[in-house]
Length: 215
Figure (cartoon, rainbow, N blue to C red):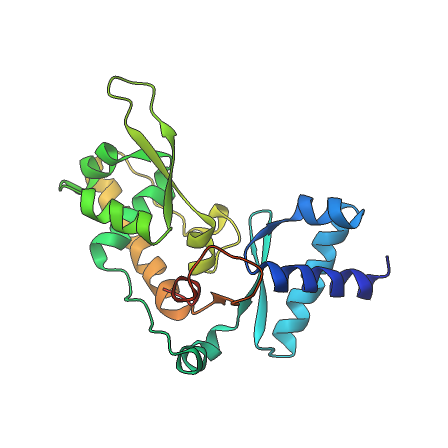
């Protein structure tokens, strides 16, 4: 398959899907190597950015997704009569940072670091699909453990968890809280300056449009 044909085909697939698709799945469908899909995606991403297109190609670990460019988010909301979801509160950002840096974690671990009950905030982040349950800890009571999602990566403009701001060395819970507070400031800056949202499509994405236009 010619390079331009490969790029156009990937673009068409992602446009209709309206949700993240794994690179291995795309490669298998097209009968090409995963490295070919990776290179094509990189070229597409660079071209969209250079031409200041209304869409962006976003990579989240081994998943690709077409999203709206953040600078046009306000116009999209006006045209489609959607509202901007409220930004995350400081407690929500704190819990999200703890999950992001120490995942997989239990709610008890989150509360040990924060020193307060976090049931409501964990539930809020679950509803926003920024975190998800990923099993149960093999201890008495078998508490649920949580991790971040692809929505988290997309919202904060991260390709992988490796791009999280580095935490300073910690030796105690107090040190952990101080380090997390610093990381929260960086995450909050990304949250306020992102605006990347999924493109609404007819492809059957389970997300609502409101969920797909930034946090």
